[in-house]
Length: 189
Image (cartoon, rainbow, N blue to C red; front, side, top):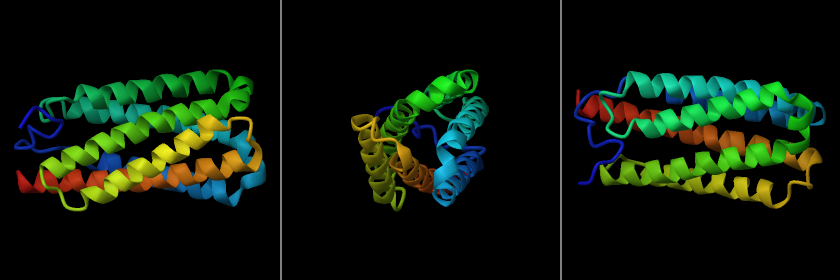
Protein backbone atom coordinates (compact mmCIF):
# COMPACT_ATOMS: atom_id res chain seq x y z
CA UNK A 1 0.00 0.00 0.00
CA UNK A 2 1.21 3.52 -0.72
CA UNK A 3 2.55 5.62 2.09
CA UNK A 4 -0.29 6.78 4.27
CA UNK A 5 -0.38 8.45 7.64
CA UNK A 6 -0.71 5.00 9.18
CA UNK A 7 1.67 2.95 7.03
CA UNK A 8 4.22 2.99 9.81
CA UNK A 9 1.69 1.82 12.40
CA UNK A 10 3.94 -1.10 13.21
CA UNK A 11 5.48 1.34 15.65
CA UNK A 12 3.27 2.55 18.42
CA UNK A 13 1.24 5.71 17.99
CA UNK A 14 1.99 7.50 21.20
CA UNK A 15 -0.24 10.18 22.61
CA UNK A 16 -3.46 9.03 20.93
CA UNK A 17 -5.18 10.62 23.90
CA UNK A 18 -4.39 14.12 22.60
CA UNK A 19 -7.00 13.62 19.88
CA UNK A 20 -9.40 12.41 22.57
CA UNK A 21 -8.70 15.52 24.65
CA UNK A 22 -9.24 17.79 21.63
CA UNK A 23 -12.52 16.00 20.88
CA UNK A 24 -13.76 16.43 24.44
CA UNK A 25 -12.79 20.12 24.35
CA UNK A 26 -14.70 20.57 21.07
CA UNK A 27 -17.80 18.96 22.56
CA UNK A 28 -17.56 21.06 25.73
CA UNK A 29 -17.23 24.20 23.61
CA UNK A 30 -20.24 23.14 21.50
CA UNK A 31 -22.43 22.47 24.56
CA UNK A 32 -21.38 25.76 26.14
CA UNK A 33 -22.32 27.66 22.97
CA UNK A 34 -25.73 25.92 22.89
CA UNK A 35 -26.37 26.87 26.52
CA UNK A 36 -25.46 30.55 26.19
CA UNK A 37 -26.67 31.66 22.74
CA UNK A 38 -27.31 35.34 23.51
CA UNK A 39 -23.95 36.07 25.04
CA UNK A 40 -22.10 33.54 22.95
CA UNK A 41 -21.39 35.57 19.85
CA UNK A 42 -19.12 38.03 21.65
CA UNK A 43 -17.77 35.36 23.94
CA UNK A 44 -17.43 32.97 21.04
CA UNK A 45 -14.85 35.17 19.36
CA UNK A 46 -12.71 35.17 22.51
CA UNK A 47 -13.23 31.52 23.43
CA UNK A 48 -12.80 30.38 19.85
CA UNK A 49 -9.54 32.32 19.56
CA UNK A 50 -8.06 30.72 22.66
CA UNK A 51 -9.49 27.31 21.81
CA UNK A 52 -7.98 27.26 18.31
CA UNK A 53 -4.66 28.45 19.72
CA UNK A 54 -4.59 25.62 22.31
CA UNK A 55 -5.73 23.10 19.70
CA UNK A 56 -2.81 24.18 17.49
CA UNK A 57 -0.31 23.69 20.29
CA UNK A 58 -1.78 20.24 21.05
CA UNK A 59 -1.58 19.12 17.43
CA UNK A 60 1.97 20.40 17.07
CA UNK A 61 2.99 18.44 20.18
CA UNK A 62 1.21 15.34 18.86
CA UNK A 63 2.99 15.55 15.51
CA UNK A 64 6.42 16.16 17.00
CA UNK A 65 6.13 13.34 19.54
CA UNK A 66 5.00 10.92 16.80
CA UNK A 67 7.30 12.01 13.97
CA UNK A 68 9.30 8.77 14.17
CA UNK A 69 6.15 6.64 14.33
CA UNK A 70 3.98 8.16 11.58
CA UNK A 71 5.25 8.56 8.03
CA UNK A 72 3.39 11.69 6.96
CA UNK A 73 3.46 13.33 10.38
CA UNK A 74 3.93 16.68 8.65
CA UNK A 75 0.19 16.83 7.91
CA UNK A 76 -0.52 16.83 11.65
CA UNK A 77 2.16 19.48 12.08
CA UNK A 78 0.68 21.60 9.26
CA UNK A 79 -2.77 21.33 10.83
CA UNK A 80 -1.37 22.39 14.20
CA UNK A 81 0.55 25.32 12.73
CA UNK A 82 -2.56 26.46 10.85
CA UNK A 83 -4.61 26.31 14.06
CA UNK A 84 -1.89 28.16 15.95
CA UNK A 85 -1.70 30.96 13.34
CA UNK A 86 -5.49 31.31 13.12
CA UNK A 87 -5.69 31.37 16.94
CA UNK A 88 -3.05 34.10 17.16
CA UNK A 89 -4.84 36.18 14.50
CA UNK A 90 -8.14 35.83 16.32
CA UNK A 91 -6.64 36.71 19.71
CA UNK A 92 -4.83 39.78 18.40
CA UNK A 93 -7.87 41.32 16.63
CA UNK A 94 -11.00 40.77 18.76
CA UNK A 95 -13.24 43.44 17.14
CA UNK A 96 -12.34 42.38 13.66
CA UNK A 97 -12.79 38.77 14.75
CA UNK A 98 -16.45 39.37 15.63
CA UNK A 99 -17.07 40.87 12.18
CA UNK A 100 -15.46 38.04 10.25
CA UNK A 101 -15.96 35.17 12.71
CA UNK A 102 -18.16 33.20 10.27
CA UNK A 103 -15.34 33.14 7.71
CA UNK A 104 -12.73 32.08 10.26
CA UNK A 105 -14.97 29.35 11.61
CA UNK A 106 -16.06 28.26 8.14
CA UNK A 107 -12.57 27.91 6.68
CA UNK A 108 -11.23 26.29 9.84
CA UNK A 109 -14.07 23.76 9.80
CA UNK A 110 -13.52 23.18 6.08
CA UNK A 111 -9.90 22.22 6.75
CA UNK A 112 -10.95 19.99 9.67
CA UNK A 113 -13.61 18.30 7.52
CA UNK A 114 -11.19 17.48 4.69
CA UNK A 115 -8.72 16.11 7.22
CA UNK A 116 -11.49 13.98 8.77
CA UNK A 117 -12.60 12.60 5.39
CA UNK A 118 -9.03 11.75 4.39
CA UNK A 119 -8.28 10.04 7.69
CA UNK A 120 -11.47 7.99 7.51
CA UNK A 121 -10.41 6.50 4.16
CA UNK A 122 -6.99 5.73 5.60
CA UNK A 123 -8.72 3.99 8.53
CA UNK A 124 -10.72 1.96 5.99
CA UNK A 125 -7.53 0.93 4.21
CA UNK A 126 -6.09 -0.54 7.40
CA UNK A 127 -9.44 -2.04 8.40
CA UNK A 128 -10.16 0.01 11.52
CA UNK A 129 -13.76 -0.70 12.56
CA UNK A 130 -16.33 2.10 12.38
CA UNK A 131 -14.35 4.08 9.81
CA UNK A 132 -17.68 4.90 8.15
CA UNK A 133 -18.73 6.93 11.18
CA UNK A 134 -15.58 8.99 10.81
CA UNK A 135 -16.44 9.59 7.17
CA UNK A 136 -20.01 10.58 8.07
CA UNK A 137 -18.82 13.01 10.75
CA UNK A 138 -16.30 14.47 8.30
CA UNK A 139 -19.07 15.14 5.78
CA UNK A 140 -21.30 16.58 8.52
CA UNK A 141 -18.53 19.00 9.49
CA UNK A 142 -18.11 19.82 5.79
CA UNK A 143 -21.82 20.69 5.51
CA UNK A 144 -21.57 23.04 8.50
CA UNK A 145 -18.49 24.68 7.01
CA UNK A 146 -20.26 25.31 3.68
CA UNK A 147 -23.34 26.66 5.46
CA UNK A 148 -21.21 29.15 7.37
CA UNK A 149 -19.28 30.21 4.29
CA UNK A 150 -22.39 30.47 2.10
CA UNK A 151 -24.31 32.70 4.54
CA UNK A 152 -21.82 34.72 6.61
CA UNK A 153 -24.30 37.62 6.90
CA UNK A 154 -26.83 35.20 8.37
CA UNK A 155 -25.01 35.64 11.67
CA UNK A 156 -26.77 36.28 14.96
CA UNK A 157 -27.99 33.21 16.77
CA UNK A 158 -27.81 31.03 13.66
CA UNK A 159 -24.02 31.35 13.54
CA UNK A 160 -23.90 30.50 17.21
CA UNK A 161 -26.04 27.37 16.80
CA UNK A 162 -24.30 26.25 13.61
CA UNK A 163 -20.94 26.74 15.29
CA UNK A 164 -22.10 24.75 18.31
CA UNK A 165 -23.27 21.87 16.10
CA UNK A 166 -20.02 21.99 14.13
CA UNK A 167 -17.96 21.86 17.35
CA UNK A 168 -19.92 18.86 18.57
CA UNK A 169 -19.57 16.97 15.26
CA UNK A 170 -15.83 17.79 15.07
CA UNK A 171 -15.47 16.67 18.70
CA UNK A 172 -17.17 13.35 18.04
CA UNK A 173 -14.87 12.83 15.05
CA UNK A 174 -11.79 13.52 17.19
CA UNK A 175 -12.96 11.01 19.80
CA UNK A 176 -13.52 8.33 17.13
CA UNK A 177 -10.08 9.18 15.72
CA UNK A 178 -8.48 8.80 19.16
CA UNK A 179 -9.95 5.35 19.68
CA UNK A 180 -8.92 4.36 16.16
CA UNK A 181 -5.36 5.46 16.89
CA UNK A 182 -5.47 3.59 20.20
CA UNK A 183 -6.60 0.44 18.39
CA UNK A 184 -3.72 0.81 15.94
CA UNK A 185 -1.33 1.27 18.85
CA UNK A 186 -2.67 -1.82 20.61
CA UNK A 187 -2.71 -3.93 17.44
CA UNK A 188 0.92 -3.20 16.65
CA UNK A 189 2.31 -3.11 20.19
